[in-house]
Image (tube, rainbow, N blue to C red; front, side, top):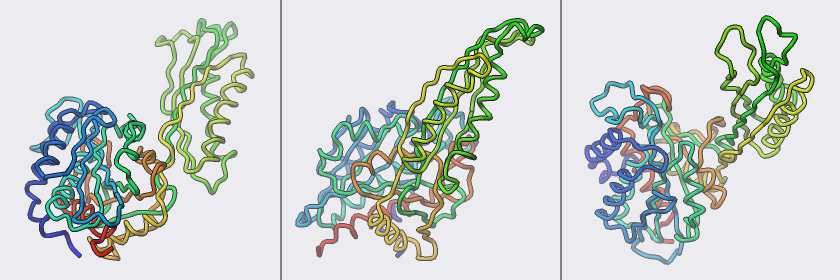
Length: 391
């Protein structure tokens, strides 16, 4: 089954909506303009209820089907925020705000869900309730958790929740999904190694934190190579190394290193955190130095529910074709705060092809507007099939 004709006929409108959002990116929870536009359109569509301010700037629309005998409530989620990146695409609809860019396609995600909501509000060919969730602050702000903490699931009596993300390099019309752990837990560490600074020509009178921190950077790599089960994915990356000196002839009193840990299961996550603490506490002692460590747990592992994953793949096959949908997508070591919603309700997160463009979080990334009716049709059919009128 191809794109729904009613949605395909709105392609130009969807494109205009998406490009307007792209020109006006907003960060984290500061998505006021985007949220206002979303709420306005949901009201124009005739949603039964439009609620703003959930999760600070989140928006929720409620669309009731022709009948309510199933009693089921299915939620669909899109993220709205952009990234602090200077756009380098040179496109006519490039960001008009310096240093902000929709470099992850959330403008496309928001538009696809608006397209699906418009169709569902007009047709209502389902038995039950569809809830459309427009979430702020996916890019590091944990907006999904903030919305859940605001009582999102309970307030709207949500039974299942579904999400979607575009994937550059995957052909338009393709979908990819997998059951179980799909996106990684994302943790951060911040370690300051303390020594005793002095003249670089007299290192014997100092306790050099630079050499100590360098040894610690190497030791941290043994967590993946020598401590973790080689069958369980793990990434430990040091991404910053800063000294308190900018001179050629000064050994600094301290060095700060920062980095990220990505894991796909609870045991490996706990192992990594424990070993980072142990190495940071004990290795500097061998060099007469000390260290302070701050470890922050970020987004949890995003794990798809098996039954809902099978269903999402079935809908994707309808919209595309069986040979263009994979249910064995590789695990992704990036993070996704939709994980918080999947911890509260069963559901599934799927990838939709975005064709030949730069990878997400790149200044030359672009969302392909040809994907808009595909994603909107996926959302519409998911509700109609999950809440069939002959249930």
